[in-house]
Image (cartoon, rainbow, N blue to C red; front, side, top):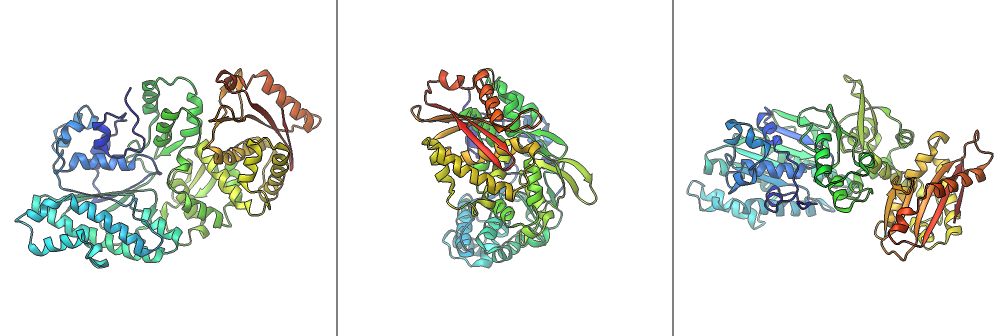
Length: 555
């Protein structure tokens, strides 16, 4: 069985180590067929953007040695001579912006310079070339020695493209990965205006009238408005999650997931895997899986949130907690509903929390919501809903943050400590207050309350991930439990949790709801999987809800 290269985004390393690889090499064909001089492709985080860009670079770059071997057996090599002759045919500038971050502009530009130094060091052969003027070599060295001012930083890529063009007598491919990271970081840290001014000039110089450039490919999570950053770019096209072009090149398609699960001999939990990690839609392509979460699941075999705990969700949380207009729609989304929203994918970050169109556009573009139906294409109105269980848990965490400051004395860590140490009377009292606050803050309907509380408690339990494995809706015994908390230390306390809402037409009171839930736990033998694996300290808990009232019984 091939190894799983989690976190490996360098195509060459992945292939040399013979890590498991889902063949996305037709992305190269699609780029070569694409007629845009500058193509910006936006996809959610951890969707394979960096790996694809690295693959594109290794295919095109004339400075990469033994590249043909890396592509042996891949689909791109079956597409005919027009494509295979492009292997190693161009000088390539490859720049990643993922680490260009800081608490202020000065710090950010320092890290930008370090990325430029790494880039220029890949092309040191230019300093020995007789084709390159001495003055250009001097400016090249100034980059390496950090002896440059802002204007010189802003023209660095265009200067390098000119030098590579002269040296190789071929136009240059420019590949820029995660272009929007600096701007999102600057907004969160409070110096967006300074950052946008710098990068508007940088991209303007790099792209406008650059006769040394064959093509530029950029990737990012969000589509920053062209007027704010790419105003000088000509023949500039953007391909978002709503577009068909490149729709199967990122993420794992339904056909691909079947092969992945077969290759790793996974026959159980297939439907649960779909509920947790499927649900994305790119253009008209449905059933796209989150690749990061699938790879993590293949490694750990646990149905828990992986993607929402990767790179920072600071911008999303900041926008949602500041906005005064989206609360009611978030409530409906948490109930599993699809809502109608105007989706503007051209993000204008400044003041985004005051513009609903931009908020929904950002949430769709970054993978937190998916489009389920086109309502009015001309007006950009769509029906959208939460993608899957992973994202539902993130929203439950954000909702908790919305009202957590109002719950005096109910610090989450304190509540979780009461739970795992079996101080359950204190846990129930604090949880009751939490529920009272939630009902006064959120409109949780009775028909959907069970799912809402399930997701809400799951979001709370994520904080225990260092010491517990949190499982949800998995088979054990003769049925599926709601939540199981499995300690990594087998001597610690483990938990089975069942959620029930009082049904007035079937039960006389909430006490009967509790009795029915306990009966279900015992009849379905939910504790079986824990006992089979040697866990003995098992606490079973029933959460019964009736409007604002919640009763918890453990045994």
